Length: 328
Image 1 (cartoon, rainbow, N blue to C red):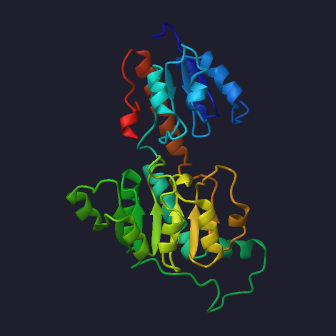
Image 2: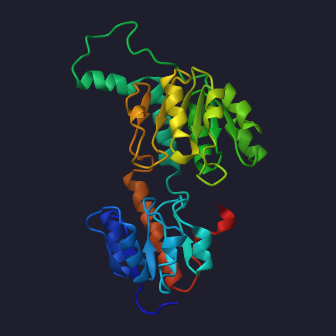
């Protein structure tokens, strides 16, 4: 355990209040340009710091961890997802990993519902018509979308966020169905009036809307592959506010172009910023820049969790949000 003030490197800009508090407590080096650090800079930062405050844009694999040296003892992720981190290798090298779980549940669930409404009610098309001044007035057949009340919503991943989506969907009059690695407790099913499907294939084939709310792990990579996407009804919609890697993006693009799906709402993408250009051209697709958790309140709460994790570690205790491989 290092003595004195911990040396902390923060890889991206954080809310001003969070950075100010970090600077009060620790010897901190910030990233004023807020640009993604190349691997060479990340390696240098890891060699010279006790703690690295990372984000989902930092790919910290076994090769990078091998360059970290002996000083780095904690990677405090600013965010709940840790699929950008090789947690197992970090643990083998004596580096603890923490994250910020449970903070963005409501924010992400809100964005899921926003995408469902945006796609089914053709909100971006209406917005584009108003911004381009091409709207010629109300018409009985213009911008016809679909009513979501009574529709079947299939939630893939019934954790905190999936359950929050289910509560919102029920308020909109939707029928809630779900597939999960483990069936949730009976009282949760009763509260949410949710129907469990052991078979993902059978569920997606019967849903009007599918919402991706599971993390990215080796088991969920391309869980919605070309075969499963083809099982969905042609009038169905898929939304994703979780991780882009869960959907085969090329297969999704082909299906949308071929009319095999009615639409998609995406906040995350399989290859980060490198989005399939054909996907951008489709009118029945709503694309957002990974803003599901982007609320001021959420970012401040995430920062508070990062600080608590580092402070607890500095005091010689286990960070309250420590991540271990068995959790993934």
